[in-house]
Length: 30
Image 1 (cartoon, rainbow, N blue to C red):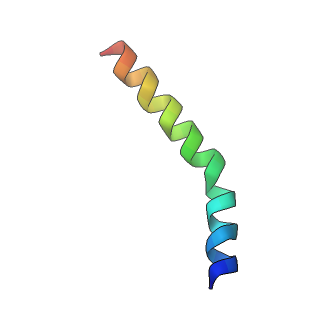
Image 2 (image 1 turned 45 degrees about the horizontal axis):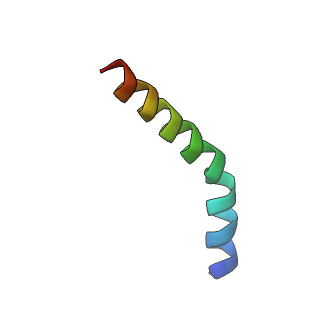
């Protein structure tokens, strides 16, 4: 269970970073 969670987090880490960067850009535009 724990290993699967870690693997999921690692695979989604880049996606989360992209989402955060997009949110910062949107906030900057607004």
